[in-house]
Length: 128
Image (cartoon, rainbow, N blue to C red; front, side, top):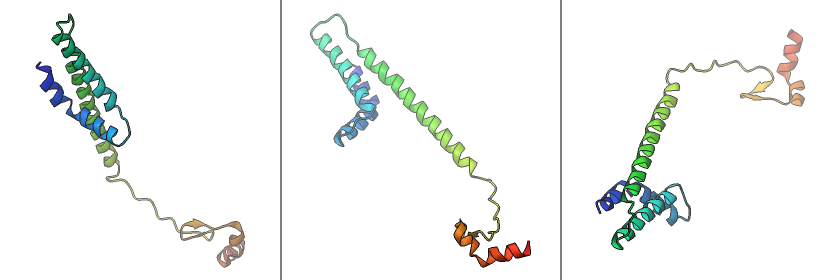
């Protein structure tokens, strides 16, 4: 029976996430995890009450243990990746501000028909 408080305390992240997902009409990975842990514990409790041969209280606790380790490692690696990505922007060189040519206006390339009619384009052809 010591598994009940363990499942409630350790499984609260999975149960809360699964409940929120189901409440909004969606599913996520925590829904089948919560079902598996609850059914495993329920079957073990049933077997114990009815003097059955097999009880798997350790299976549900072990499942939560490994899932919580995986979730913790996932959060640690995501934090490291986030820190690495934000670190790339620090000290990065700024782009060189190229002067706009006669074929550009306000950073946008002008169309070919407007380019031929442009006085600055005609002046650059005469100079060259």
